[in-house]
Image 1: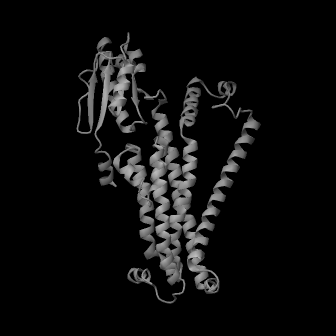
Image 2: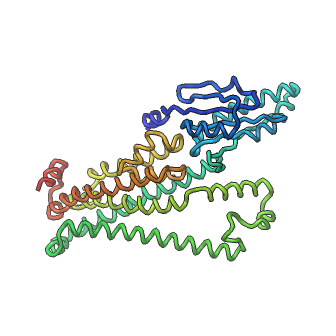
Length: 397
């Protein structure tokens, strides 16, 4: 994980800086991972167009103001997508240290005065198209993406184990011998896979309906306008102070800015594709053994890609959701359902999502052929615990 994280952080980010104040000309020093380019004599709109056309990672705009307090509120970072949390933290820290140094020169040297005069900076964030983003928004994207990816991870394991136990039960009770006298093993396998996947979708749909009903009941009982982006102004003024109200409004604004429709649609597609892919593998394991205790030696190759996907998503997507490692793992069919869902809230082009989904379903077709070969032979094998070598021979029958 440390190695993959280091690969993901090797990306060189180029950032343009338009400093109209002239106070930070010497502060930004390029490093192996971040290259700064100072812009001079152009307007903000021209700088945004140049940064966007040059495929720069972002544009840091520092306006010329009358005082440092106004300057701290006017600094804005423009980018195509949500910037890295760690990178924005470094930039904010650099700006904050410089502004506070200048402020201390204007003030006395008394320690209490220094403490009171300290200014905190959190640069405003906007996309090149004018959509405001924030550190809070990046955190919410991480929460929504992580929750979607981890939820899918649990669904795949739960329903995969259901199929595996079903196959083992039918095999040990010899019911399977009666069933395959009328149905081809491949058709029976596909029936189990599709049936369990549809059961999962049904359960997910029930959750969505219950949540919508609950939201409707809550809004009607507490008198909250469901069409509004946030609770009514009167309720907010009565229940929270101005600072809390601002935080709630920011949270609601950032939630509204999330691609929730895209995330829900892709969750369903990756849920179906992921369940189909892993269900076929779980079914083949169930057909190869006589009891659930014998499945442990075959479970590790199935679980490792899922576990790797969760950790890759948590480590690399946090730092750089559009980095090389994040993108590669969002295309690999065995990890894409989890990693891609974690990336979508940060803004993933639709063509990348489509490619990932297509690769997932194509891999499922190949996996079904592989699983059907094992399933056809394994469901009639009893008594002896198979090895990987024997299972490989079954593929040739």
